[in-house]
Image 1 (cartoon, one colour):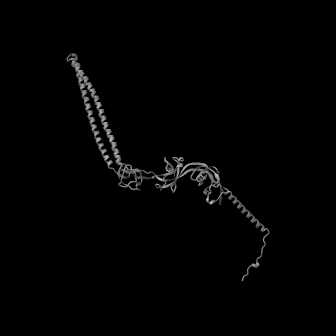
Image 2: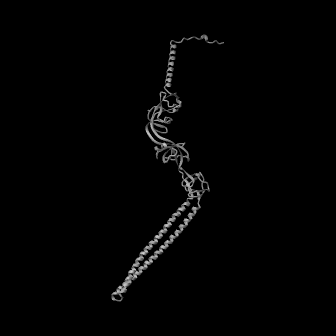
Image 3: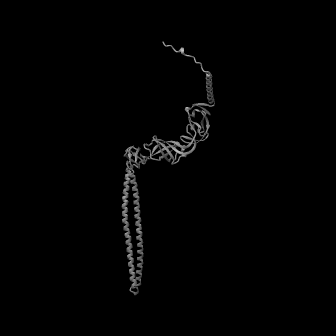
Length: 422
């Protein structure tokens, strides 16, 4: 059996002053606890509420470049998406289905309209008839010109004959061979022949002008009929519906072999090679935006730079529709009606005193903010300026370096002072 070592133990006396040190440590600890309790009690008595810091978001006031922007929603739309319509009441025979890829000029549908076909045949018949009348008028014009010229030439021959007769009478009048009265008759015959020749020449010119005018009238009628024929041919050609651009068929508005009225929509063609973004801009931003403004489009897998290209002139449900066009190459993989988000970059303000944006902007109306000093959130009047999606401009009430509660103030109940627990 092994004995314990109790007989070998010896009592050691504590050194001098050890008890005093222990009392001093206890006193210092008690004083620290009292000070901490006083500080906590003083802080609690000076505040209306107490909130844990984990429930709050605190940001620091700083300086930088404030980019005024607007976050809006939108969707991808085709820049070119024509809707094809029926040209007249007809029966539709579809040559393509929804989703088919087509090229420019491909036949998409054929319209059957007996009325337009008959009208084209009537116009063709009228055109051929007028064409024959113009040819007949040309022959008649040449004939009338020849007759008028024949009469003028005959009158000229009579004048020359009367002139020679007068010359013969004049040669023998001094010899007394002929009577004076015969000489006067020959002279009168010459005058009469000259008048007839003159009038015949003028009549020939007038007849030429007349037949030329009649021919011109017939030619004008033929030209007018040619226009009518071309219009009828165009309307018949429109019965064959062709693709105006490359793309694919988005939607069909009619069924095959159905009867449609004039100007009825048949189908929509979508060109995915040129896509744009249609944005729904709140009415409050309309006065700040303009054409050519830069925008950033987030389409899920990336971000693209774009420019504002069109703005609707009307407000619908407190929103204005705007179109933005991609500045660089169109991103791949986009789809028609795909939902996207965008930032309209309205303005840039450098060296601005600003604060991160948070719910306090809406909850306090931008007139108050809670500034954190020594663990106490103090309700402080402020003045805000321009706002953006991520930051707000501070015009008064705060200075650089101040820490402000930007989220979680809904539990403060507008208290003047709120204690923040660590």
